[in-house]
Structure formats: structure tokens, C-alpha cells
Length: 354
Ligand SMILES: Nc1ncnc2c1ncn2[C@@H]1O[C@H](COP(=O)(O)OP(=O)(O)OP(=O)(O)O)[C@@H](O)[C@H]1O
Ligand SMILES: [Mg+2]
Image 1 (cartoon, rainbow, N blue to C red):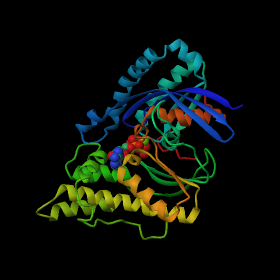
Image 2 (image 1 turned 135 degrees about the horizontal axis):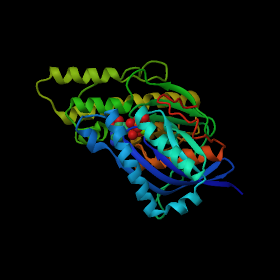
Image 3 (image 1 turned 120 degrees about the vertical axis):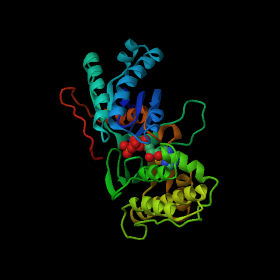
């Protein structure tokens, strides 16, 4: 018989406020996760006005939205019942924007004290990784979601680009990271140069759909070098130079060429890691994992180089920041004995994945 637990999870690390209730069952080395509730407030409309996230503004909005989401949650599961049901409260403790993180962590401490429940600090990136284990609701079609080890994870988000090897659950070896901008940042910054609204990634990807990805050859830095590192700042400069020099610009072609340059770099290094470490499975995690071209190109490349390698992607709803992914990592951490005290838990904007 396996162990099971339920957590209330809170995410406020950047510009999405998320609250979720997640139940996890552990049998042997496997976890069965169920999202009981999952509420999200996106601050995109606010940050569109400034073309990016202003940390002070994001934190203030979390302070308004988090209590609202908790009230909305209490309408779905009455608080008295929720208090009975949850074993712990999970919260993102880092990495992220310090003032945004503080809102979630301080609110969580208050709930934990009032309910006399343990706190489970969650690494936001671990949340992105475990989002892949979340299944759709009953009745929706889904393929089996189960980690196989060694598992290679490509974390691609607004602030991170990392290739990580997991030999086991909750065990991470960082194989390579970006030397400058993250993949999501590269999407956002080049999209801004094209005059697209924040967040640039989805907007650029939509524009790219009708463009010619071979129209312009933007640089794929580090792709040829024999390591697992990334670099994306040169791409932004190359795009800025191109836009300044050219008299006639086809924005669709530029968008498609940018997208392919980013995807080529990500797929190239992931395949290099697959050849080097021969993982049993590959997973992509983080906001950029929503990118259709990345999903299809990586799947294609894996079929060619390592057809036996299992490949899966998180459900679209759980790729960008949300509370359910923190609940997923939180309940697994809790089932493995991670607990923290309200008096000692501190946020860490640079919390490493380990
Ligand atoms: N379809 C898409 N194509 C490309 N990029 C996308 C797509 N959808 C979202 N993104 C990018 O994903 C990023 C947001 O992802 P996420 O919410 O995981 O990042 P974050 O939380 O800001 O950063 P981190 O997780 O590193 O702290 C943004 O850079 C956004 O442009
Ligand atoms: Mg994130």
C-alpha cells in the first residue's frame, strides 16, 4: 500500500498568482498526482502596459490577487473542509523576484500557523519539472505520464535554460545552462524588437506560423561547440542589427527565422546530451515548452537519434507558471519528508535546483 497526501499550494514567484490543491499517491517509485483545484490570476494585462514585468508592481498585484484566489478556492472547497484535508501547505520559496516570492511565502506562513500545518518550500524549477506528471481532468484524453530514469529535462522558461539529468526523483545534475539570456527571454526581447506585445514568446510564435523560417539565417551561438551550454544574447543583437539595416522587412519571416534559430539551439544541445548520457526519457519543462515548433522538432530529432527514448511534454495549461505545478512538486517533497517551520523559512531569489 502506498502513502498519500494532499497539499494546498501557492505560487507567486514572478507575475502569475497561483493557488491549487493537489493530492499525491506514492507507490514504490511512482507518483499518481491529482489536481483537485487550480486557480490562476495572470498579470499579463498589467505588464503589457510597461512591456515587461516591473517587480514592485508584480508584488503589489500578488498582494491583491492571492487573497482573492484563496476566497475563490474557499467557495469550491469550504475552508473548514480544506483544513481537515490538507497535510501541508506548499509554497514557492525561489528562484524568482524577491518581493513577489515574499507575498506568497508570508501568506503561506500565516495559513500554516493558523492551521497548525507543516510548510513545504518548493523550488520553482522543480515545480516546472513535475508539471509534466500532471494529468488532464477525468474524461480528457491523455498519454501515460510517468518519469523514466535516467531522465533528461530541458528547462526552458522566462528566466532559465538548463539541461538537467535526473537519476532518480528529486535528484538533479545540471549538465549545462545559458551563459546569458534564457530562451524565454530571447523570445521576449526579440519579439519586443518586432513591436509585439508582452509576453513575446506566444506572440512571436503565432506570427511565425505564416512566415518562412529559412528566410534569414540568424546565429545559433554555441551550437557547434562541444559543450551543453547555451547563449542567446547574440541573437537579440543580430535581430536588432538586421531590423536596422533592412529597408523592407517581412515581420512574419523575421519571426519564423528567430523561432527556428532558438529551437535549433535548444534541440541541438538536447540531442548532444542524449547522445552523451543515453537517458531513458526526455521531458521539456517551463513556459517555452508551450512552443509548438520546439515540441515537434525535438520529437522528430529524438525519433531519428534515439527512437527508444520516451518523450513527453507537460500539458499546455501547466507549462507557464501555475499553482498546480507547485502542488505537484510540493506533495512529492512532503511524501519524502521535506518540511519547514514558519519561523525559519526564508525566500531565496537565487535558489539552486538540487
Ligand atoms: N508558445 C510559446 N513560444 C515561445 N515562448 C513561450 C511560449 N509560451 C510562453 N513562452 C515564454 O515562456 C516564458 C514564461 O515562462 P514561465 O512562466 O515558465 O517563466 P518565468 O516563470 O517567468 O521564469 P522562471 O520559471 O525561469 O522563473 C516567457 O518568456 C514566454 O514568452
Ligand atoms: Mg516559471
